[in-house]
Structure formats: C-alpha cells, structure tokens
Image (cartoon, rainbow, N blue to C red; front, side, top):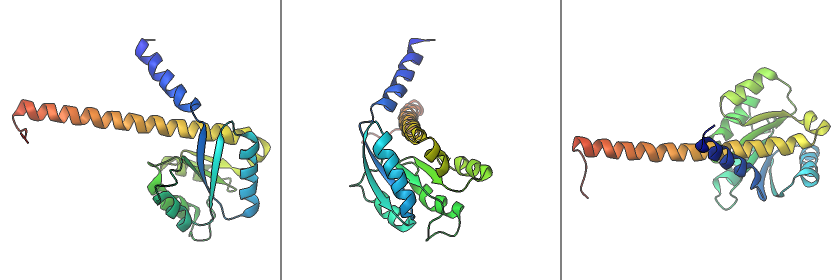
Length: 180
C-alpha cells in the first residue's frame, strides 16, 4: 500500500467521523412512522440532529430548494399522498440526489424495487421493520450514506478541476487560447 492510498483512506474515514451536527429531512406522511424514526434518532445518534419533516413531495421539494436548510440527508418514504407510485416518489426527489444523499426508508419489502432505486441513485434502501429490530442500523446507514456522498462529491469536483486543467493545457498546446 502506498502513502497516497493511506491518505485517501484517511480522508474518507475523517469524512465519516467528523459529523457533529446533521440536518435530516424526513419525508413521511405517517405520524406514527415519523415519530418512530425521530425517537430512534434521538436515542441512537452520536451527533446532534436537526429534524425537518415533510409530509408530501411538494413540501420536500420546497425544503430542498431553500438554501437556508442545507439538508445533509433525506430519509424518504415511498408511499406519499401526492405520488402515483413508489417509483414516481423517488423519481421526483431524485433531482436533489447530487445535493444530498437520499435514503429510501419504507415499509415496502421488495428486493427488485430496492435494486431499481439504488440503480437510479438512491444511497440506500431500508425497510422500517429492520430499524425497529435494529435501531443502530439507522445510524450506520446515515453515516455511510453521508460519507459516500461526500466522497463522491469530492471526487467529482477533483475530476472537473483536472478536466479543466487538461482542457486549458490542450488549448495552449494547440494555440486556441484566449488572451482575455
């Protein structure tokens, strides 16, 4: 293992452990399910959490568009009143998957649907009954999802910078640069 690899792993590990305060958007129309998730978070999270609730896709979109909230992670139920189907629910909020990780937290136990959601950008897919039986699972899923999202975002920015530098170099080499 080279020094460079150790540094990269260290960076990733720090991005997972530097969570001190997390802003969570829970998109859930059921009061019982919302309070269950909120209670698990209150008792199991190792960091402070600001929880914001949306009961519809429309409310969630309003919160995600508003830069004052700066949401770190979305926990999304798939059975919302203003959605035609579970796929439609995710599809509408998937526009924000580059902004923050979206974790599907649902009662629908469907392995194929889970694979489909992960394939189109969801960070994870978890059935609510699993977090009832293993509340620590929610902490782990949130921490890993935020860490993965930060890592991918950082890699994307780095790649875009390298691409811009390469493009600039190619322009200079080919003589098609602008002087102003």
